[in-house]
Length: 196
Image 1: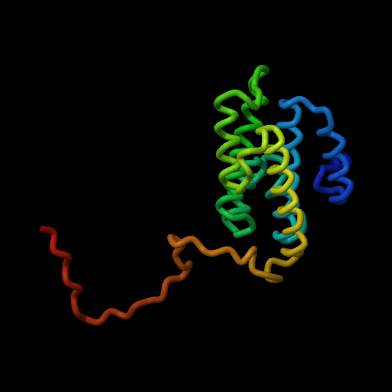
Image 2 (image 1 turned 45 degrees about the vertical axis):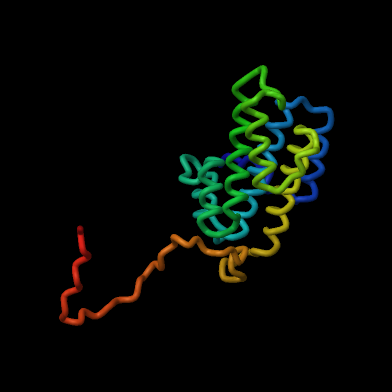
């Protein structure tokens, strides 16, 4: 049987942080976007793995061959849908993914490019950053803050889904109960709304 490749989320968090800090020193903007993307993907994966039931089924769901939640986008949606990350964090992760993709698909991408600068501005707004800090420093600071929040949350969630309520986030106002209460028919017809 082939030995399974060791992924970043399989190593201790402190070791992963050391690797991250070493990787960003002197890195180009393009390289920085790749490293930051990997950091956030790692943090999301650890958060999901800490919440979901441990075992082969979860591994297959998240990172197995042809896994249904094998992309950064799908993992973000799952983390948000089960209440592990907030709406602003979900949007921030989507912005980081877009920034990473801009750098990945353009040899000339830089922080000063209008499209990249707009995404960085949106990211600052989502995470409450300070606009007076240069964009590249702001970007690094916000990514580190977001990743640290996710890593810290791993210890709050724990290995069992019923350990605590995920984040105790406020439910969406549009969320409906899974099993709405049954209403007994009264025998009377409901009045039709006036269509005039």
